[in-house]
Each structure stands twice: as structure tokens, then as C-alpha cells.
Amino acid sequence: MVGRVVSGAHYGLRDWLAQRISAVVMAIYMVFLVGFVVAHRPVQYGDWKGLFDQVWMRVFSLGFVISLCIHAWVGTRNIVMDYVRATGLRLLLHVVAIVALLIDFLWAVQILWRL
Amino acid sequence: MHRFSGLLLFLAIPVGLALLQRSLSSADQLNRLADIGGYGAALKSLLLIALVGTAYHFCAGIRFLLLDMHVGVTLSQTRRSAKLVLAIGVVAFVLFGFLLW
Image 1: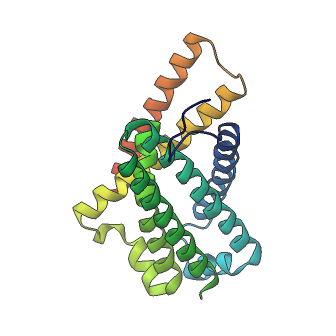
Image 2 (image 1 turned 45 degrees about the vertical axis):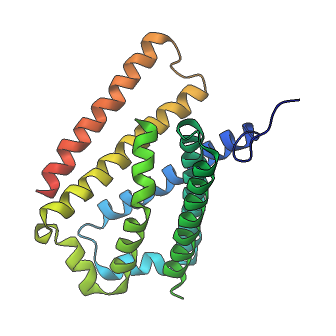
Image 3 (image 1 turned 180 degrees about the horizontal axis):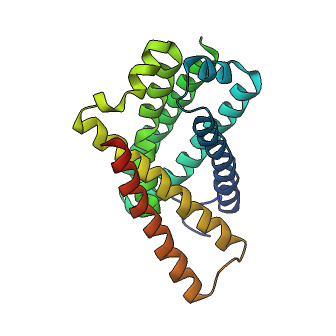
């Protein structure tokens, strides 16, 4: 029986896969967005606002933000698990990362749907 | 390096969201954001770090994805691609620095 720690351990493949799928989603989105800006430069407000008024762009952007949150969570969690040994501090940093990403996510939804 | 740049980008998420929010709020706000010449040196430096971090993390990430797919996995190839990614980081630093200043 392997000794278990409160924070860390288990789930390997799922996170490994999530990290790569989210990376691909973000890469496609960034190439698209940079392409849009380059094609429309200098970007006028009408073009920019018109782009984000489209439902598909909002969904695409939401996909990017969800990917970003998953990716950043797996990334920061790996960093914390590798470099922070004290369980209490490790748990605190995990919570800080989760809360920060949750706020980022809700903020992004608010921006995209202008709530 | 990939982890360090990733951590920087994690910290930069709120900045990116704030920029998106302001750029979408009005034409005046977008124009003011686009006027990079009016930015202070501190803001330009932060922006430069975020842009170079993004470019580096992007390229290093693609390198890892290719390695996962067993593309370029010999020792000499991995050394070469690692140097290439670092070189792109340096080029991005010079390019974005030039564009900002």
C-alpha cells in the first residue's frame, strides 16, 4: 500500500492529455487572433467589436479561456508539487491558483457576454 | 524555462483580460490602447515580458507536442530544436522590443 498525501499524487494520463489538448486549442485560437489583427491592421473598433459580437467567436473565445484555465491549473499544480514540500503551504498555493483561475474564468465570461 | 514562462503567463492572465475588456468597451479606449507610443517604460517592459513569454512558451510547447508524436527525438535533433526555440525567444525579445520602443 502506497502512503498517500493530502495534496498531490494520482491522475497522470488524464492531465497529460488535458495539457496537450488545451495547448492545441489555445495555439489555434492565437494563430487565428494574430492573423485577424494582422489582416485588419490598424484594427478599427468596428472590426474588433464586430468580431467579438459573433456567437461563434464568443464560443471560440470561451473554449480558449476554458483551455487556458485547465492548462494553467495543471501547470501550476505540477510546479507546486515539484518544488513545494510542506503540505500546508502546498495546499494553500493550490487553493490560491484555483481561486485565481475561477475569478479569471468568470471575468472572461462577463467580458464576452457583457453581463 | 517552459515552467517559468508558464508561471509568468499565469500571472499575466488578469492583465490580458483587462486589456480585452478595455479594448471592447469603446472606440476611444481601443485607440488609446493602440497608441503604444504613449505607454510608460514600466508598462512597456511588462508588456515585453508578457509578449516574449507568450512567444517562447508557444514555440517550446509546439516542440513538446512534436516530441510527444516522436518527431525529432534523437539527441542531436532535440538539442538543435531546443536551441532553435531559445533563439526564437531572443528574436521575439528583439522584435517586440523594437516594436514597442
